[in-house]
Image (tube, rainbow, N blue to C red; front, top):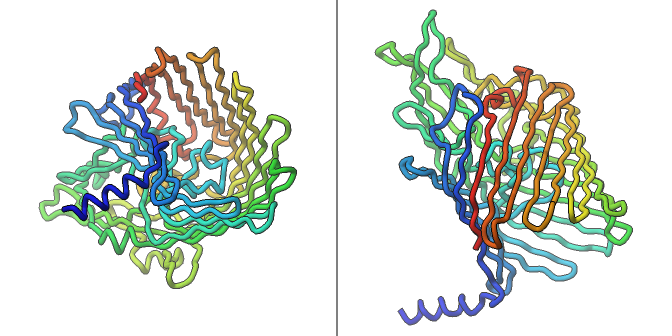
Length: 448
């Protein structure tokens, strides 16, 4: 007992006195403006967000967690661990271990892409990210040249939005989640689906998966300009799903057995950054290839052998064809922060040929094809600010509007009111599934 207390005391002594824990507790509510075909029963919840910053074992440490507790709904909860890492660094070197954002594509966040870092997924239009779990090492080889390496043998897929399978039905406590159909047409009548999950070996089949990445960056003009390129091979942030189906013996339902699949993909790209006065300019080109291979230790599904490997399933009830199409984007942004207001102008262009739709529960189409975006946040004073963000796809005619107003009641409390409006006339658009998810939301937040 004395030995345990001594070890615990040493750990406490190693924590820097400047360490602090902060966060907020909030009550949140949203109101639907229309009636989607599939929706959850949840429209209010409490949320707890916490972050820790300090030092442990001669390292700088940082961790943050987000929890959402649904009120009067069988103690349902969403949870997320965006970051939790230890960091050692000096002027020329930096080593971090744990879960941390890999900031190799800075425009990824605005466009809600989840190729490098997964989206947290608690809100449909949330830009918050979760990091990758592994080891990152940065080495300054010259005053103007840095190389970075990421390695991991630990895969944590995106945790949200969560799905629950019970009594053959799939449900979710996320208000915007996309669910599979409950029935399929067969011989002029709707036959219900009874869905089960084929539980994988969590450690072998999902968690113990390798990742490897490298990035180089060359800077100039006293770090105001930078050119970088990167290559990253890793598991996809979401589990793919394969499924097989057969008619139940009573001929009254179709049994569906869903099997989670982990697929690696290769992400690579280039990025140019330049500060021009108070404007930060970023332009990049990125490719996401789900069919790449990297040695025997990094196994990947072969798109040419999907059917032989039972990854494509065809029946008289429905067809499951996971999409393995390469996606490439050009993107650019200009960001200005003048203190009293912040302005961001953005553009993204799909360069690859991706024509698939979003009519299959097991796969999605691309989010953007030829889209401009603009955001402005204006601070009237230290207590009141408003934000408007509009994204418009010139090819699909999608309109994604998000607006917020935030007012500080006093130093430790605030009120937030916002709305999300989605217009997607093209049936093949990614956003077509969510165009009935328009909502007004509000929250009362207490800081600590």
